[in-house]
Length: 399
Image 1 (cartoon, rainbow, N blue to C red):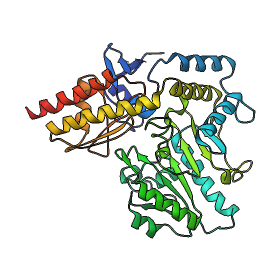
Image 2 (cartoon, rainbow, N blue to C red; image 1 turned 90 degrees about the horizontal axis):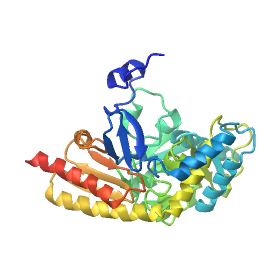
Image 3 (spheres, helix red, strand yellow; image 1 turned 90 degrees about the vertical axis):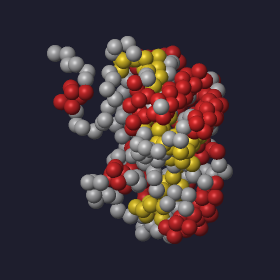
Image 4 (cartoon, rainbow, N blue to C red; image 1 turned 30 degrees about the vertical axis):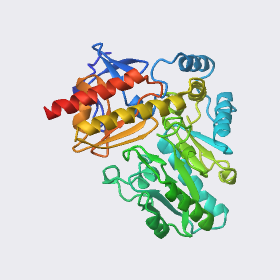
């Protein structure tokens, strides 16, 4: 078979035009660094869009994957699989919730949560209680249900009609929450820290009012922890920074240690909502992915990576605020553990390109936000390298 060059031109010939890929061909990773086919090393402040919590090449993760792959790669959910049992037990211990459903991706977890939300209303005898609400500026995924809950037109334009009986509450607007929630509401989906939305945190007052309305109208609160979960904000789940307990939690991205894995965790009142055949997946809960997930969680706790995320994130925010005092291009810095958003006065894409030229990989979201999601194991020296490069770029712009 002829070997094709790994270039942007070949990419255009082979694939649907979904992705605006960076013009580098990655061959492997080492710690917090990615290496291209010409040997250039890039400091990775994206981490596979928040997936690679342990960076690249963690031996514990590799050993878990190799050992399980040697025993069994796939068998399906027709069988009892110990790696699923072990990971499910660990997630329930951490969360205090009662049941788990494993899927392959974040958007699949959201779809399962939508189905659980609507099925519960039938079980409770409220067949007209179908409305599902989400928050403005959110991102929940790209399949039809998840996309229907996603706020930005760039993700939904051209795909009408979307899922019926869905709606949007203005983020952190208690008056709008009061106006939108009703006896017809089945669930409210929230991101405690909005990732794609530019790293914004929900307010304590908004959550408190949401809890009051849940008691009044008996709807579900679904926490989307797909990007913010697994320790990134300094706690295992971002909702743990607040006095709240969701009915459902959706988890993905870092959960499989780089392999496709997602989960929906449910409270005791959700335990019997699904019955046999209501929902399923061929690959969800794959034994290799579950073994990797358990190794990833063990490493997070063993290495104190939640505490490290909080400490390194605080250090980075302090350094970025110092940059903001000298560079008027920075309008705002928002930081929750190692979820960092830097609002700038122009399209952030320009800074992604300039950082790439200096061998640092950053991401842009919400048009004018530089988003940083480095591996949780990043050192302070590596974090400082990112700050130094941003300083250089901003200084060059002003010269």
